[in-house]
Image 1 (tube, rainbow, N blue to C red):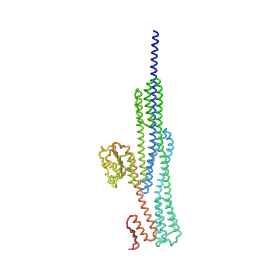
Image 2 (cartoon, rainbow, N blue to C red):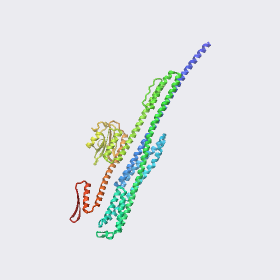
Image 3 (cartoon, helix red, strand yellow):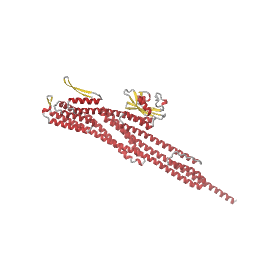
Length: 619
């Protein structure tokens, strides 16, 4: 009886011992499996978070650097417009308009710079820390540029106040010209004419050589008067006072030198803020390059994290396989095979293949682990793809806006400007079609000025136009507001064009300066609901730049025409001054005027005495 009890007790102990060992082995293997799952999830989460933060940060840096560059370029355009327009349009209106616009763009540039500085300071990426030195350099440079531009405005105001000196110059020279015109010696009148021509040439070009010619001719005239006898200064029987003539030419010289000093100060100050502009441009380019380097580093870190994740998963799998095989070979086989698949998938992820999908059969935990792994890999691929696509889209949009700005700053022909812009817009965003309409002189119709593709050329050839207020384009011009239609098939009032049969969505953006509408930028796409508010706002930015470019081109053409007329006038005056007789003067005048006006024949007549005429002709 005692032996039976001892044998039964030994069997139970053995059975319990085996069961415990299996449970311990299974529990240990399960624990290792969970560790593997945790390692995989933690590493994948770290990979996702690190990649997202690095890519987002580098993308924001590139976006902000482009924003700073664009705002500063717009400020430069306002500054250039002020310098070019204050004489023709008046100091009061141009200083208020362009100075305020310049300050607004500089303020926006400072806001973007402050945001960029905050982003760099809060970033843990050591590659971005050197940017703090660059961002610290920009505020004083912007202040230097703003101060230099304000100094230019002040000098312009001072130059405007000096208008009295201009009046005195004309008064002195008009008096001297009347006095010496009737003298027997033509040298007096010739020198006065040289003085006045050199003065006009200097204020038109700013070249020092005309100042030298002016001063040389003034000195010669002064010496000629000082060396003259009383008999030399008799005009129509009237004795001229040499002391008065000397005083007038000296007063003229003093006023002329005062104006030359103001002009020199203005041009020197212009060089100062252009130097500041070059420094700002160089620094913003360096910041953009740093953002690109950070983006590349983020991609490298992504690969490194993926490699570490794969290594950790592989090591845990090896450990689980080794210990599991000691306790239970079959259990170990069931565990190691799924883990091997996960390890291989992790290795593929490390190499950049985020489309991996692992199929695992066996215990519930392993299946859940595989599903989590697959879900994490899919989410990571989706998030990375979305982030990269978002950054690329935004970067491409800002680069396109920057390209338009640079193109507008170099093109002064309106037709070429319109053609370049529509091609840039269509190519940059892969739109179906883009074209620009400009208002005619009567402000009643929008005439097509540029379009892309065969359809654009055909409409240009036909002189395609749209009445203001009609269709999407006419509505945008009439109300000076963006008209966005995601689906044209359900839009009442949409005007279909047989040359563009694939149009499914359209946005019309007014090209305007303030309340003045110059035209409309119209973009069409062949995908419904593919044009969004973001497209509209970007195109509005482009349209604003086009408006400034059109205005600058128009002003440049007027300036060119004015400069050509002044050059022709100066050339004719110089040739007439070299004439040796009245007959030569008339002949030269007729010949030069005929060439300038483009006529085949020209004639000039003057009345010498009663019923006596002299004439000059040119064929």
